[in-house]
Image (tube, rainbow, N blue to C red; front, side, top):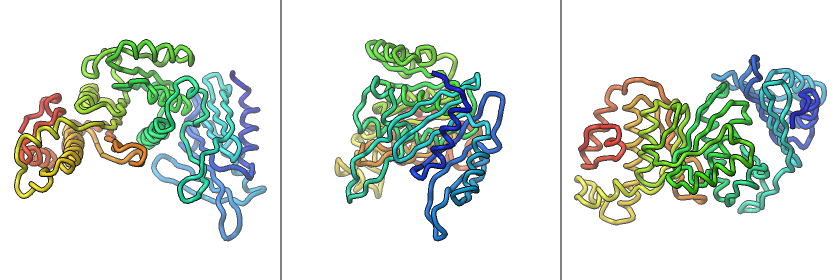
Length: 383
């Protein structure tokens, strides 16, 4: 239920100046207004001179950090930030998590939760986990999901946060391809909406029963007008209008290629895909001898499978670069949580390939004699 903004910001101020503060972030902007910085982060630090409140602000290009002393200096710094027309505040203390979003009408939507108490980590360190989406958020009571799944989703959201510009404004059209039970779909919507963005999100899964289940969940959460689901294949499901952001979490084998190909055809501005199961190129490597002198790479089954994973994702990133994207492959979650922990992250630039990129890709494909599924989907010449 909306609350008066002044009263909510007074509560935020008290938490920011509380000695129990652990972290706070302000971002986004209110309707028709623009803060002087795109993001601000506050956290307590201990210096030789004593405890300080560290304030880091970003103008979108550079990060500026200063440390202010408790008392008058901290009060003034906090008041100055609260006077900025940020659209969102996320504040964590040892006991409380508060999330504030300023509505279009200038009121505050506030979610409050008790701080989670995670079990001590190996080695005896009882360190609070820094989540983008509070594990106590009410949506988890609806969507469920194991602790491992929540860790994967939170890690994916961190990669998403690092990909989108801090000063991004809506509307933002998003599609989650191969959404399954829609853990990522719902969590992504929650996170993006809390950033103050106007989000329209479509989840695609081949199963009609999943579509019905996920649609019912969206209705229970009160998001039916913004989060919808369609049944169909990744390659053919009707998604209109074309999305700005494409997500694909662990779409199996060539389903990841289908997700990447659709993103390219849509010219989606951003793409995040965590691949799963690289059977296609692995089968091609089994069917022919490796080029010299790389026989040792593929002679043993376990090494061949792992090399196929690396080769597949390297070729995927290379193809995205040939089609106007700036692409990178990064680790998005610790391998102890899932062995499928790589993420292909890409941003549309529309630029032609840099000199040598096409030749580099062709040389790799020709040397290994493979035909990547993504190349076929994008009508690239095969080996």
